[in-house]
Length: 162
Image 1: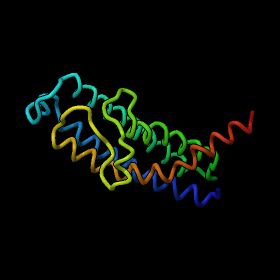
Image 2: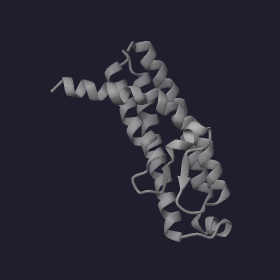
Image 3: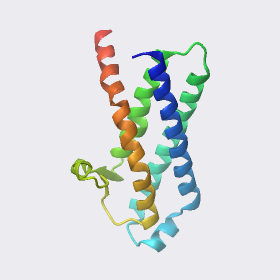
Image 4: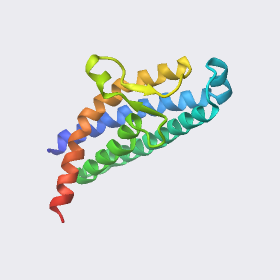
């Protein structure tokens, strides 16, 4: 893949991560477990798991944003580093959003075909959290489709280098 295309994708992902980080940070700065309980009575531990996962996603997004910024500022453009970074962002941010390791929620892949949101929660959640996740999901889906190439390409390169 050419330098210009990789650089364009890196810019696109950088913008995506900046917007995602801002939305997650705003939500996490404004939301407490007590507020969540007041809005929708549910399992306290479940809310802790959700908030923990959102904090992890925020950290991953901020790290990816910083990596994109550094690579885009470097001269000459480091294509291999950029591709490796996009691969890492795919795994740390995108896959963590759709399938968090701590089972805060899950992706119902059948929903994607019907045009509905595919992120499903195991228990009832507050409306403002539903709005946040629905607001993020479309962009995460778009970036996932763009970065899936790096998943297969990077693995192929790793296998061939052995």
